[in-house]
Figure (cartoon, rainbow, N blue to C red):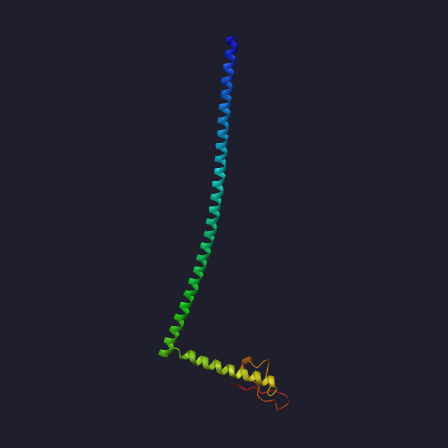
Length: 155
C-alpha cells in the first residue's frame, strides 16, 4: 500500500471520529437545552399558579377585611344606640325628659280620637266633616239638624 493511501485512510478515520464525537456532543447539548426549556416552562407554570393563588387569597383577605369593617361599624352603631338609650334613661330618672312623656301622652290621646273618628265613619254611626276627619282636627259628631249643614266640634 502506498503511504498516501494510508495517510488518506487515517485522515478519513480521524474525520469520522470527529464527526461522531461532534454529533454525540450536539445531541447532549440539544437534550440539555430541551431540559432547560422544559424546566423554564415548569417554573413559569408554577409561578403563575402561585400568583393566582396569591391573588385569590388577597381577594379573600380584602373581602374579610371589608366584612370586619362592616361588623365593626354595626357594633359601633349598636353601642351608640345603647348609649343613647342609657342617656335617655338617666334623663327620665332625673326628671329632665318630662316634656317627652307629656308629648307622648298628647300623641296617644290624638291617635285615640282619630281612631274613634275612623271607626264611626266605617260603621255609619257618625259623619266626618271635610275629607277624612284628620284635617285641622275637626270631626262632626252628629248628623246636621238644620238644613243639611254639619257642625264642627273642636277636640
